[in-house]
Image (cartoon, rainbow, N blue to C red; front, side):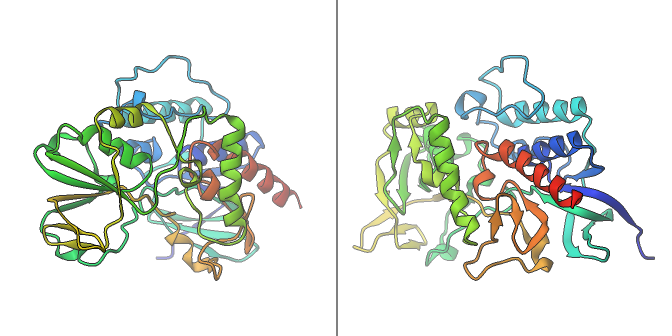
Length: 351
């Protein structure tokens, strides 16, 4: 039997920070909308973070629009508990129409100037779609020769659940961002040894990374997506600040960085000059890519490999907006992107 298609003004795909922010403003503007979220419960990517990532280790969570958090958060509590609780409370207080678990499998062009959102539980014909699927479900594993023959354990940061299981192990941590700092700060002193490697020397910043600096960082990433290039992470252009996690890693002597190895061997890693380091564990803290496979039927990719975006609007498909993509793929830009997307949808549907 053919499933019926529900006509709706706007569909928001994803209920992390960017999706909830977008839905809040769209609802304020009076749109009939649905928020489709693939997870079993609220919290976006935060619900999957390591229980060892406590609130005193994160940069903080930005208040969602319209509702301020009233109580101070116990810094010893896991972010994977605190943030989902906050997001769930927010959904209830703002009365957002979130449906879950709903896995969107495709977005296609339909008739009557609508986009068809196909999911495992139904279909929606929307006049506009705001995509906020983030990156967590697409961990990036870079290719290095020999990796398939490594005899030890390899894991991505997405699967990291704390230092206990690494006791007595010789661990190589790959990556130059906040995720690598988190792992290094916890494994140093627990693992038998930790070795930190990055493709580029880390850039350290000792200012307070205020509002102006955050805006500049977002602008640099925004310029790439406007040109249709794959977005860089915001962290890649901000550098590393001296956060509590970084300071802990420094105090433990874990931030002696080595350049990237050229090959993985069955028992370790090797550099171009022939130097070899024995290891039984590789942790790839190498970031994530945007989860956009369901948009493939729209053929949005530019020759440069990215999707050309003006603000949040996809240039090749003005009915589609990307939030949590490029400059809004962090807590710095997500709320602003949600407001921008909602305003743009209002202009589009008023035309």
